[in-house]
Image (cartoon, rainbow, N blue to C red; front, side, top):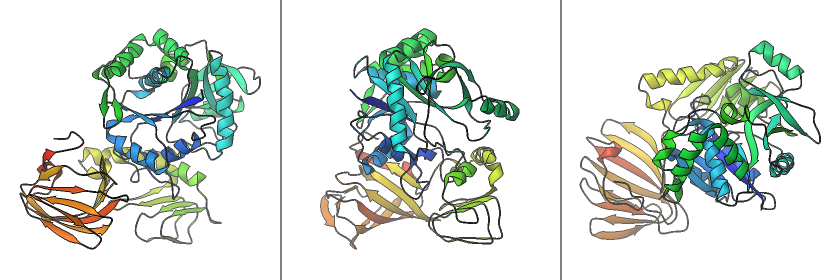
Length: 466
């Protein structure tokens, strides 16, 4: 049996706002002009000679995005849904219990979905060494060589090494700047929360040091329900302890070992960190999208769908999205979390929501919005259909721009091809479906006195929504 990767994919999107948000965390954002870090993580564990089918632990709100992005890289993970966020102890207890279902001696490799590791071969070799030690009954943490005296990471103090493995002498909480420099000089490692253990040993150690959490997780798994192909944990999950795996178990267990990582790594924690790992021009400008920069140095410039220009700027991040623009000094990137908190306290939807919203059948994005009208771009995945529904307060015009759409309108079913349209009157019973092999994309224009999503009366739904 190979190593079972368990990918933790929860969290919010405050530090890379406005690209990431509560409902679109940073691991799902295409930060390097292509795949997201979640997709890169799946690709890194795709070699079936080394790794078995991965397990992804995520929250209910992200499950459609997880499934959609996994499909895009030809991955088919087992998806487990947390009903609420409970920090890493509970998530890793789920990892141990879920891996144990494949056999008590299954090797679980717990990974974060937001890490950037360019060298997949070096990562796989480190995983192989960690798995060997885990088979011997150890809980192995991957230690990363610090590149700077960071204060936002925990540290690992190792004992003497033998073949890249050492006993853990101590875990050090996030230090102040002076202590970070000392720890780095002493040869300590960053702790990025990547762990490897045999499933039965992981369960055993959690049961010793956090018995209530392990019991709650076992009960939550035994009462889990199917949720559109994912496994939704039962209500007992709420009784797990809300704390870190490091604090609850790793600082107390006698089984802890560290393997030194032989690869470059970043958690892409803020815009300054992203700038540091992105390709730059001779002036230190990292640019993504349609960007023009003159007399600009050491800057991160990002455009989503329009031209962004910079003149005479230094040490800044300029991040453009369809509904928000951020301009901030790179060295204050850590403070963006406070800015997002202020927006949330003010009731601004931009703090938490993107214009693009994922649904089990595909996605939609608001293109324009004004008094009594809303324009959406809708994408329906092959073989999927929206609910049979009606609206009390709005009518809709649909124009197909690609693919083949099957439209139910009251008692009539018709097929619309590219550049064909249909009108849905207010109160009409209707449904949009994709019977084809490629995605259906259409433009929807809504008009009426009330245009919010709660004016949907579902009469029949494949996904159990009401």
